[in-house]
Length: 465
Image (cartoon, rainbow, N blue to C red; front, side, top):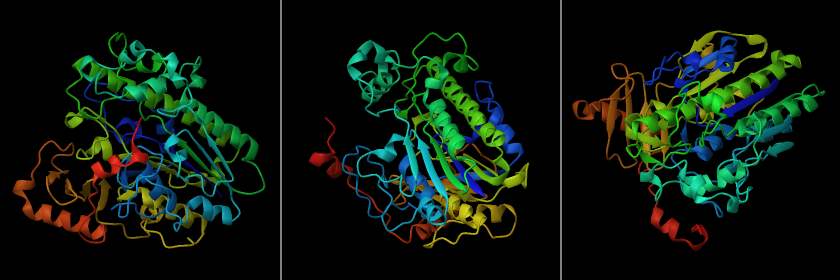
């Protein structure tokens, strides 16, 4: 049996049609026909959540089956300016899924444009016979920024964000994107086309394969070809906010916010189209029914809900925490079924190994999601997650969000209030205490770590020119 893992960065579950969340506040439903068709042949997990955020902590857990939270012993990577807790290389003592399958005779490959994995000191290509970095995303320094004017950048920043917005990121990204002419030149199409080429050359070889397709889209910047955005907000002629300022969303006018949401939806639809081409290649090549295909996301993205844009740690609400997880088994076994067990990123590696009958070389923290779906294993009664100096816990009744030390605790009744509109912590102190106890237990006991960010940023090697 082959294994294909498709990871889509920042894809919200409520923007995938098969999750049935209905129209957005703007009245549109995001179009994802390829994901919906795949879901009809698959098991759809309805309560899938990240184990830790953001990008790199998620991938550490996903590749190793080992929890990243609670980020003990975090040491910022030399040569990297991202200061999120747990943002560091895969520890050398941990064994990756690719290394395990490589040792068991699998041909292994990674195709990705998630450039953070290739920064100095990172090692996320461990265990892959072939790895391809598709250049050009976000701050990837491949395009000459001198060709991008201040006016070019200002076209994507409202007046209120021009002094404090992501100018350097936008300038580099716009420089990277200058050579685009056709849809195939956009990042997601390039990633899936590279994966298709790898399948053409390796997919019918005499040994099974493990292929990871890790698309940074629909992560911002959101600038799909105009015809995708016009599906959702046609005729707009104002500032196009393709990369939001992280924090409160009140710097955007209602029209700018609406269009930013349309840009995200358009990006999702473009990614869906190219995922569909990739799945069709598996089918045409005759290997789909011999393949375990997993499609998921690392986390969502805040688009003004709860007054936030970006990925903000104190805003761990459904728009950030609810992710799709679609698993197509060989022969489409279990097609059209759903599973409501709590499943997290560190469950994927043990799920793959269990499906293949391969014993993990070292113990893993995760569960076998397919055994949960089949009712053959007992699931966890709750899920916990960490994001910088904040923690999250979800069970059948409550969602709890607080600082690592327990301060600023908020509690939401997800049965009565699935969108987290009313904090009921003051009325339910016992619920707060129980959710706190669970977070601490999953973290291995108090105190949870809190790092001195100012000291980190003061290091000479960490400063940004």
